[in-house]
Structure formats: C-alpha cells, structure tokens
Length: 220
Image (cartoon, rainbow, N blue to C red):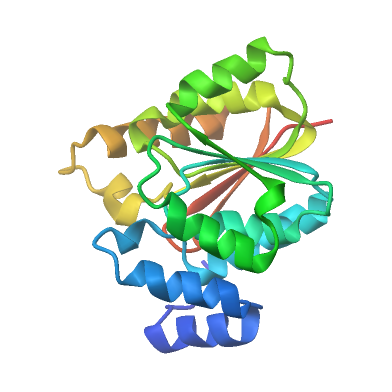
C-alpha cells in the first residue's frame, strides 16, 4: 500500500491559504456562518474551490444544489458559472435566506441563482415531469442524508450525458465503517455507496476530501 498523508490542521490551513481563491465576499460569508449554531453544515473552503473547479472543467451552464444553508457553496458555484449560467438552489427552509442573498448580491451573482424552497425530492420530480431531464451539467447533493438514494435516481435522470453528480458527506465522519453506528442517515449513505460501487450505468470516484465526496459521471 502506498503511503497516505495524514492531514493536520496546519496542512488544512496551508491548503486553504495556497490552494483556494476565496474572495472577500466568500470569506465574509464563511466567517459569518461560523458564528451560527449549525455552522458545521457549511461546506469547507477547499471543497468550495473544488466545486468551482468542477464547474469550470465541465463548462457548466446549468447546475443544481440540494441543501443551501447560508449559501456559501452556492456562492462558490455561481461565481464559476458564465454570465448566462443558472444555479437552481434548493432548500427545505429559508431561515438563512437574507444572509445568503446579501452575500450573493455583494458578489454580483444573485441573478444567476434560482432559490427554491421545498422538499428536494418533490421539486426534482416536478423538473423531470416538466421535461428537464438530461439538461443539468452538475448536481451537488448536500441535503437530507436519509434521502440520498432517492436523490440519486432523480439526479441521474436530470443530469446530461457527460454531466456529474457530486454527493457530499459520503464518509459521514467515519461512521460508515463503524458497525456500532445505526442511524438512518448513515445507513442510507452506506446503501448509496454500495449502489454506486456496483452501478454500471455510471463511473465513480470517491474522494477523501472534507467529509468524503463521491463524484458520479453519467457516460456520454
């Protein structure tokens, strides 16, 4: 087995300092989010940069995000989209909408973001019924972990051939390998991980970044 680097807090700080291009608006939103009780729901800085990179590589114009929180990841992705690009950002509540929109406006990307409130599964089903299947370049899934397997099948219908689905938290703080943990969220992620491993409709890459990201490529 090849050597694997053990990440320390100092190395993570180095990655964020040297490996990301966080703007002043992004930094302000990140620091504002860190003051909130549920601050751990925000994607890390290096993950935001990774999403930005993916969107640029794909030359994406139409992106979906499930799970918005304060809009930090939305801001990263919208900033990577072209002027006529669109991000459909879905969350089940609008608790932090004002905080998110203030920063989206400050960054000049508010017009790219279509913020929708509701159950992600229901909204995705409506998009499929409306004929939007195969029209999304990238779908980022960071919502209710107990529903990941449902989101997968819908996202697979909505993403275009050559498009990518990104699942966050697929290592679930290490709980996926702890047999003593029996939690609906962890159980569904375990099922999803096994589904993806054996699903010959797609190509996958599980990346041990942040809390685990799994990239799913829908072949052309």
